[in-house]
Amino acid sequence: MKNLEIYIHIPFCIRKCNYCDFTSIVSDETIKERYVEKLIKSIENFNSDVSSYSVSTIFIGGGTPSILKPEFISKILKAIYSKFIFVEKPEITIEANPGTLNREKLKIYRRSGINRLSIGLQSADDEELSILGRIHSYEDFLQSFNLAREAGFNNINIDLMSAIPNQTIKSYRNTLRKVVELNPEHISAYSLIIEEGTPFFKNIELFEKYPLPSEEDEREMYYLTREFLSKNGYFRYEISNYAKEGYECKHNLGYWSMTPYLGFGVSASSYFEGARFKVDKNFQIIEEEKPSIKSNIEEFMFLGLRKTKGVSSKDFRNMFNQELEFYYKDNIDKLMKEGLLEKEIVSMDEYLLSLTDKGIDVSNVVLSEFLLD
Image 1: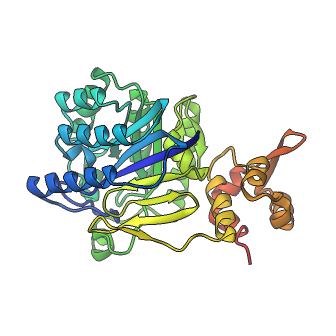
Image 2: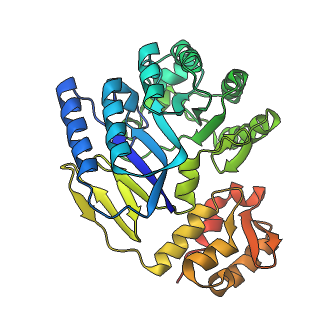
Image 3: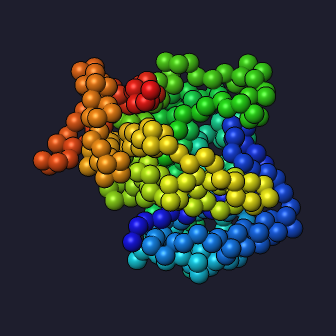
């Protein structure tokens, strides 16, 4: 059977963070309950044939999924369990914010089958957290992390952010040190991007009081992340993600490998049976134009090269019934000569093509080389 991933979108937050451009709202309990009812109904009414698929991962994201009553999460998962076939040990993740977790909630998550927790810390500095608009302090995070360990979670991701207003290299190094001391299994480390429409974008004068780090400091934080985490046993398996051996996020690896996925909930996207579709605010499915072979090839390269393992020539051949060099020989040769790509021979009929460290540093430039005319 073919693998299938499921994404569940929970759009509710206590308040919107200053950098957030995701679909999220502040709402009351009545609206949350109605949303969950509609979400469950959309799962139950999904009518495409999934008999040849088995679900390998579920990711409950948002928003802040942990803001919901845990019974709602259990009901959502029960609907999915009833609708789909599963692999033997699926990875089931829920995103959680410090300040929204408690002992009983975590116990219910575990009983519901959730086996991976992703906690949004962002920074260990309380002033930086306040600037970001986070609802928690570092102490709140520590309490949530320790409660998760007590509840039996042995696969925890911590989200971190660099290039925060007023952040220094020293404060960022301190955040990395504190997080590594906690020994999580996975760390996602992203650089702040000021997106259009976010509170930060609308309040640019804030940066007069809390300046953004210089380009040089931002670059140093980027290198510090890689070096510090590598030294402490976390290997980089994707541009922004680090894990201990065996704890890579299977759900994200599926995205980057173009594994089919179904999204449920407002604004959730799907890629299934070669088609893409999205859920609108009324829980109606909006079908997008079926991707062309050209766009699928480009996406295969863009996503696959995010992984440090890179893309497989064999996977490319199996997916597109053509050799990788047919489309990209000159581009590959050029990028290899420039030291931005490297090739690893796996067997007589397969090689892996991946970004070098230098290539990762300028990944946007490298990936643009894989746009087809």
